[in-house]
Length: 160
Image 1 (cartoon, rainbow, N blue to C red):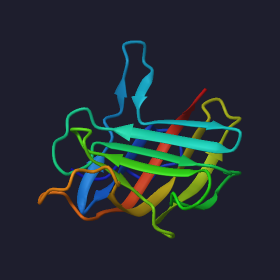
Image 2 (cartoon, rainbow, N blue to C red; image 1 turned 135 degrees about the horizontal axis):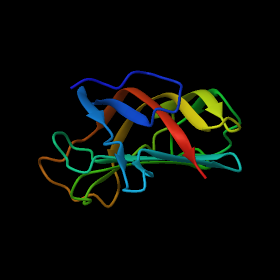
Image 3 (cartoon, one colour; image 1 turned 90 degrees about the vertical axis):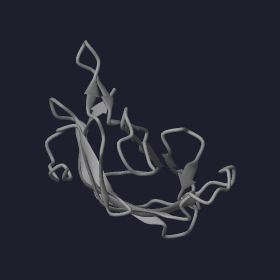
């Protein structure tokens, strides 16, 4: 398995390395053709990005959820819940553990293209971050102390 190509055309792709292992969203659609995952909304300067894998094949993470406020266009945005208007959640397949990015400079989301006016509006870019178990995570020996996300890339059509 390899990462999806880093494109800027609204290809509805989302992928990264989770602790060195390839992770790619399912790119699942409904019968009507609506994309379920990955999805992105952009309204009033706030970008909300969601991606998941229906069947967890390998690794600790099944869901990604980013909220980044004050997005004005292409640029580098800090991914840390220590910043106002920012939220990062990585969830496990069981839903019992949530990893969060709470440290300053925990990661970045780089928007390389934000097209809000074309025939098929989309956002494309890259991301990387470090996340730790949230405060409500059950403590166990198999709980990872940290999840490292590298080589992240996304190219997703905007939802209305």
